[in-house]
Length: 193
Image (cartoon, rainbow, N blue to C red; front, side):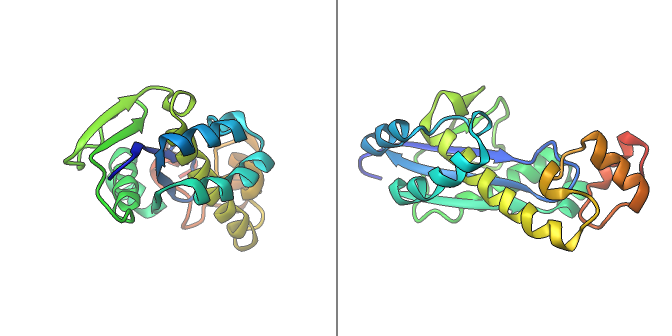
């Protein structure tokens, strides 16, 4: 991969109680990293939903390559969140045209199935533009899915809570029961299942 400076990967939805976990990988050149930084790319949690939506097309346009992967609520319940997250990351990586020579991953956990060079960076989404870009891509794609699922699973305020276990979401589960997209393994801790 010539002139590629960074390949960053991140996940979103790991702590959610509803729906899949999403991962995205973004490949950036030095020049495009600088351009995206000028546009305001940073940790997706520090950006408004509107700002993330505006940055998404810029990231996709300026990335040399990118991939998105996900693991379903069923896979999370069956395999556990760590293995399911790794699976979503591997699925994202398989969508790249070329296997990266080095990968930088947000967080402290190694991507165990990955057989290449990898470096873990705690709070990487505020230190590396490629990880920040990956976090924005994963977040916008997952939020858009939550928007579509809101229609199918009305009564749970999925778009508002993004599938996270807010007090309101948990009380709506008590009222309406759980759906097939709720993570049963997560809800056992809340005594709702």
